[in-house]
Each structure stands twice: as structure tokens, then as C-alpha cells.
Length: 294
Image (cartoon, rainbow, N blue to C red; front, side, top):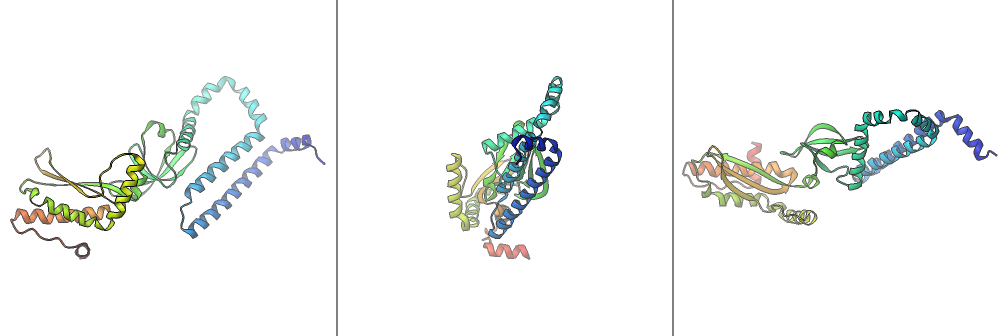
């Protein structure tokens, strides 16, 4: 039977082979586990990306820990031999240290998780993966709430220097604001009440869900947000044109569609008022869709 000293000597003698074998074993097991999790998530229609991301980070940390344990003596000698260059090494690896610190900060504070919508500086996207060095986002164009198809890799050190906003609530419901600008040949207050009723009708089919979601956001964030009923505000621009700003609290995927319907109603009322004709009764949502298709 081998004693502990013999095993230690054997490990020291075959460090390189042991390191390669251990790395391959950990990576193979990780790939097998992740593949099983993704297969089960696809079968149950569940989002397991946070679990997959956590497994990747844990296995990477374990691999580094074991490699450091195996090569600790060599690393110690190396550290002693380059003690005079420690300052230079720190300066050279400053960006990596900041990235790793940023990863620890995000992980400890739970600013976001995989699958959340976040805004870092002036870019916005859905978190796809977060590792020690960078944050990977699928870019989202906020004015239309659509994916652009671009993948963004943001170094973690920017999480310290730029504001990070969690926009996860926008994935389901958004406070969508848009402005319609026309000249002052028409007094929009003649039909603003009717336009408001039309806006409320377009939002009627999800009003109950919007009320609950609005209350949940206000309770969680401890703030008051507009909604769920539409609001309309009339102002003038610097050039003297009339600006009608409409705010709706609606499902994110329906925001642009509802904006187009309200804009269609506004234009119908505006031209009817300008020609001094009777205000039209805009078609129902079904007729809107038929007209749009034609």
C-alpha cells in the first residue's frame, strides 16, 4: 500500500499530466451536466440559463482552485522570483483585476441575473451570460422593444464606471410614451376627450392584468409610475407647433401596435376637424387590422 508521501511524490512527478487530465474531466462533466439541464429545460419549457451560467462559473472556479493547489510550490517560487516586479504586474493586469472585482460586485449585489434586461451606459440588452471578465448582452432597441440581432460584450470594469439599470419589468409591460406633432391650424382640445376614450378602448383587453402588474412594480420599487389608464398631454414646440404626448402602460409586444392605432385615431380626428366635417367614429380593433392588411 502506498502511503501519503508516495502519493504526493507521484503527484509532483506527473503534475502536467494530472493537470491536463483534471481539466479535461471537469470540462467533460460540465458539458454533460449542462446538456442534460438544457434538454430537461426544453422539455419542460423552462428558462434554465441562470443555472447553466452558475454551473459554468462554479466549475471554472473549481478548476482554477485545483490547478493552484497542484502548482502551488512552483507558483510560490515564481512569486518570490518576481517580487521586484509586483507593481508592474499589478499595473499590467489592472484591467483584469477590475473586471474580476466587477464580477464579484454584480454577483454579491444581485443587480441582475441571466435573462434580465439591463442598460449599461447607453446600451441596452438581455443578459445572455456573465463571467469573470465580461457581460454578454443581446442588444435591444428600446424605442420599439425589439432585438437588433447584435451581441454586445461589455468588460466588467465598466459596471463601476457606468450606470447599470435593471429594465427587467420592460420585458412584460412598459410605460410607452410617444408624441404626435401637428401645426396649430386645428384646436386639438375639440377632440382630445374622444381620443382619450379611444386610447382607453385600445387598452381595455389587458387593463385588469396591467393594474395588477402596475401595483406589483410600485410595491417592489416603492415608487409611483403612470398607469394603467392612458394619459394625454398637449403642449407646444419651440416652433409653435402643437405636440400631443400620449403615455400608455401596456404589454411590451403590443406597444408599437397600440401606438399606431392611437395615431390613426388622432389623424382621423385632426383632418375631420380641419375640414370642419363631423368627427368620424374610428373602426374597432378588428376593422383596424383589416384596413391595415388591405
